[in-house]
Length: 130
Image: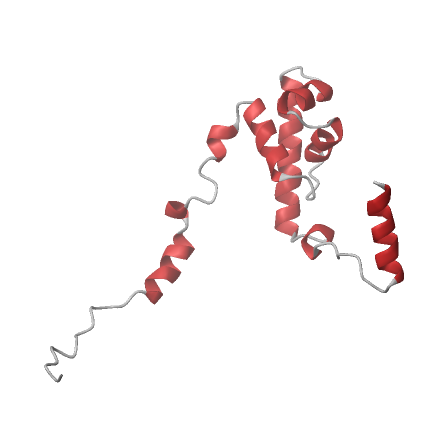
């Protein structure tokens, strides 16, 4: 641990820059932020309805209480695995398995249709020129 701290301090003294946080975590798009906050509120409601303490939920999914709390508050920096583990714990996961299903991606299908050739191209024929 001390060696890591020394390397970081030494790197900073030599002019190296610390890695920047993602712009997405600083200010995500409004729709994303609202969706994650709604998911967090829904997870909290599900836990309370099951009469489960936050510590119990954290223990059952193998995460810390802080991670569960952050998920319930809709923090965008919380790992998606925590959100999915909580959905699994509350038996709400089957409804989200269709998330990002390519069969439901109408816009993607439409765009892919533009890239496909309209008809098969004709070949130049057989060339016997050896």
